[in-house]
Image (cartoon, rainbow, N blue to C red):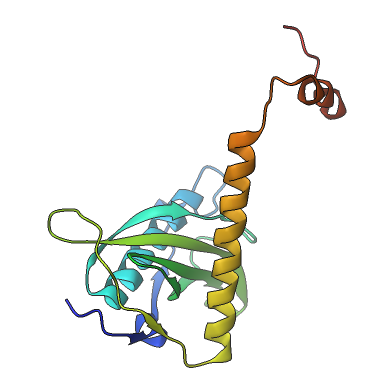
Length: 181
């Protein structure tokens, strides 16, 4: 496979699907798990399209469900590679739903999936370096770097945090916790 630099715009992909009663949860709204499944599918397609390789999901950043999706609405997912590492790509995904009778569009959620390119033996492989053609692509690339750095700092803090220290145990009272050891 070629690892020549590649335009980020070549990764853009979108899918639309009509939401059926079989996709709903017990409250009659579209099940969040179903939307997550669609998001994983488009992240795979986007990363594989960009890299020319089979890709797996390494992580999913925060998914905030902003607005419920109703049965009968048309859901559209748009994805694009936002960042490229050696073998990983951050895919940004935006989900909108449209009431096809009124035309009203709602932003339902957005998320970032980190995808990793694999060869036929399951080993990670290098992916093409990105060519950024717009300031929006530059912003998304830098936003991804910021999220990656923040995630690493958080993981470092967690690994160093001593939850057994007297200070940490005393701090639990700020959260209304009764500590009985």
